[in-house]
Image (cartoon, rainbow, N blue to C red; front, side, top):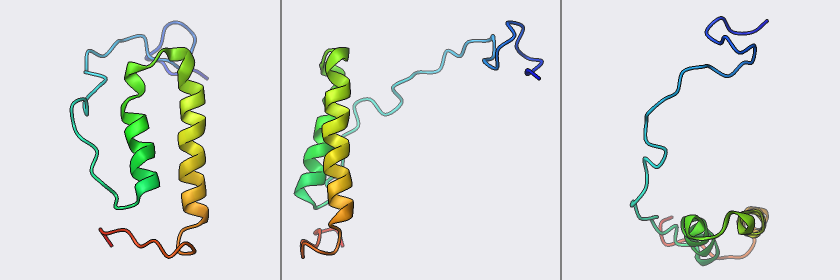
Length: 83
């Protein structure tokens, strides 16, 4: 059963929202104290300046860094300054 607020037969509401998409635009990313994670966050922050076709490769690289950092958490002896 679809939502009665949609007349198109989909679950997507028909109304549009005029809220800004980039609510966090212009905010700087705070340092985590872990160099690899900080570098990944900086890459993510620069994503808007890249062609859309480059986004999947960047997301994969960023995800790989974050996944490896999480997998090695506590093993590498690298304690962030913020801890």
